[in-house]
Length: 253
Ligand SMILES: [Zn+2]
Picture (tube, protein in one colour):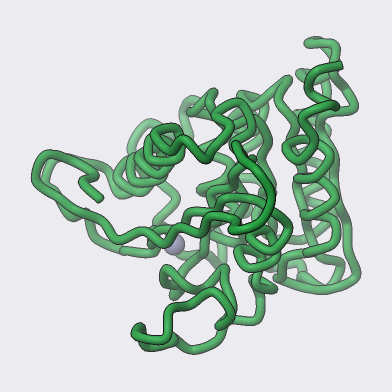
């Protein structure tokens, strides 16, 4: 798919073979070291393509959503260098994801009012950015990322940072831009204090909640604290997507 006039990106798309569309859709986003297939398992990977090393932390969220009747799309955002001069790394990653949304919107099989995004780690960070910056995203799942920028200054790859960002905002402010659209953040209790630690995530979330409150939808921001570590909580993700993207009747009422 063309991402810019001079650059093409690879995307992986699944479309349900059962039922009648238009279907809801989810942009599935992997993190560092991930490739197009990371959010999927081998059941949706074409036989002709070599399977990258299996990455269990994503729990096959792409496959699970595909089997549940969602159109899914994924692309790789784990590059560490910009592809085109004059762009920011974060901007380029986000642009590619927005082009995935463009692609979904162009498909007759997709209900353009029911497009969500979900990711873990850097993918959870990119889900935060995509949900915040692209109002076509109706629901966002950001897993293994919610924290504070002060904390991200330590122990983490610095690819999140760019000039001017810290002077303006913290992550809570970026998440708050999704309001009042539904947002689920997931953090695992086994994340150590140096990583995406639940107490820090709670602290950040306390700054997001008032925005949802002010916009009259306090129930639309939810924090899923699960018993594992840096992984997707798949049942919680599926429930959230079904509730906010899966049922036409719910949106109509
Ligand atoms: Zn990084």
